[in-house]
Amino acid sequence: MGAPMVRRLLAAGHEVHVWNRTVAKLAPLAEAGAIIEATPAALAAQSVAICMCLLDAAAVESVVFGPAGIASVTGARWVIDHSSIAPGATQTFASRLMKANGAVWIDAPVSGGVAGAAAGTLAVMAGGPAGAIAQITPLLTAYAARVTHMGPVGAGQATKLCNQTIVAATIAAIGEAVGLARNSGIDPAKLTEALAGGWADSKLLQIFVPRMTAPPEVSIGALDTMLKDLDGVAVLARESGTPMLVSGAVQQAYRLASSLGLGGADLSEIARLSQPGELNTPRKSTP
Image 1: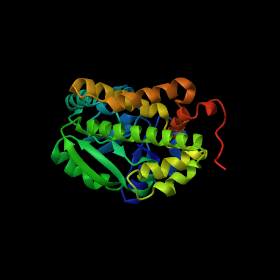
Image 2 (image 1 turned 90 degrees about the vertical axis):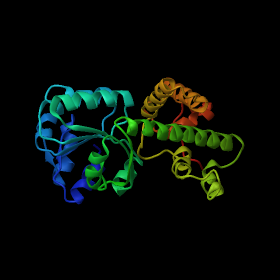
Image 3 (image 1 turned 30 degrees about the vertical axis):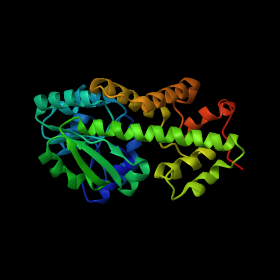
Image 4 (image 1 turned 60 degrees about the vertical axis):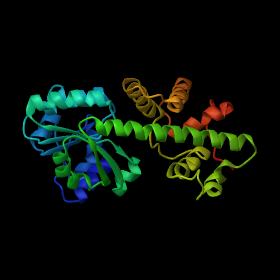
């Protein structure tokens, strides 16, 4: 899980054991009171609840079912996965884990970003047994303002894909609005003020217009990570027979951005698609 989430758990008085592939990343958390473990299995042996936040399903499978993985020991009652992975993979992992060591899998993807984690205001959309989610909710409220039980295992991940459908499309639309403003001779940085309080206003508008009109100091998410989620939306849409006309076009916009070398860039760089002359030049702050 992310460092801000660990810090929130420590601040709430929990004993927190941590593991990461990159040990150096754990030093600041150890200084804050976290206990470093050598392997996922060692961590699981010391924990009642295990919280993960990993890149994709392959990483989740490796940590849980790989050598010295969480599934190789007994003791933990719950595995809480904050990663964003496919509902089908989640259901498969939950079944495998129950057979391996009896732990209950709860898919609990989050929304709110690094800032939300640091402030303790994340939204958690949870899938799994109602009783288990009720038991872990007090733990999650160390870094989440809201925990919503959405249904059985996999329902949390499906809800996160609904969230990403809205977020990805909105960010792409804001990027086009910024491009349209700039290409029309309007200062796009003033859009946050001009649109505040109107129907176009949103938290995303207020966050991303400044990031699209001046180089952001710190990335809050990579384009390719969002593209991974949009690919997941497409799979779920196909499996459920849901027409997704807008998200299909948005998916291709992010894929185009990735093919142009922006995959590792901040999400705000999607705005460059509406300013093709800037694709190969360093972004400059708006005067």
